[in-house]
Length: 351
Ligand code: 6CS
Image (cartoon, rainbow, N blue to C red):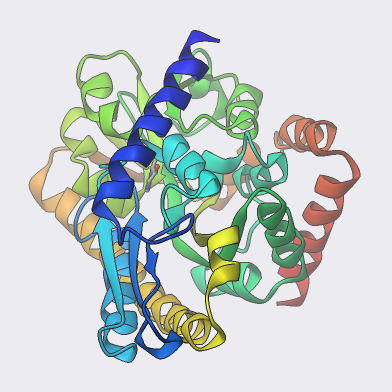
């Protein structure tokens, strides 16, 4: 209760502070009203939680570059990396409340507000190749339904993009569910992520991303789960002994606007944004592959971590334990979540 109050106060404080550094516009966000619509300028804030050069940062800066150039200076975007405006949960609340115009988040951070977003935390649900994941999150029927739920919550989703497969790092080898028994694994704070690891016998612990390195170093947790690029850039491999290429689920990012602000934008500006997003999605798709490949090479070359590639039959044993998490997901989300999950399963088959 106190924590929630403190978080709301923090967000209210940040919204007041941000009102000073944005465009100083007349409504929710930073659009400045000038004499004519054509002369109107826009100053947008775009926070994300990753470090410079990461997937979300590359996406955000590509977006900035394109919209600033296409609008011939009418749009200015300020990118706030590394959770400068708060951790992923705060960022979602800021976006919902109009404290920022745009933000990059991920379903792990929206899963308590939109339980259906937990669908991406279900293991072995999405395709086993990134091109397939990209198709499901950009062209599928399931994602359309999910986007409508984001819109009900004040967020207008513009894009989803894959950032790579999630893999495990640990202080011991993990190749069977037996190895997970009692294992303290740091996960994002989403109920279905926790349930998935509990089904393997592990003890999931939520820790903010920015505090994870020290939590691993101080052995407050035994391991964690993230894509390779994050493990490399956040230096988690320095403080872990084993890296398991487990690929049980994929990490996807969400690029969204504050819904009410989005609805105030004229069509030509919305078009610049929508066109930019198509380019950013293609750009990031290539970049995430490059970043994740290079990350693995770099981790091998610069740390003593032992890399273990799980075999198909080892992954199948984990796959056989996914039912409790799927049940929890359906219990939490009811018909709407069930429908989204079934649509995604159908999308996977079709796409
Ligand atoms: O594990 C996390 O919390 C985070 N992981 C990534 C790859 N991006 C941001 C996110 O919050």
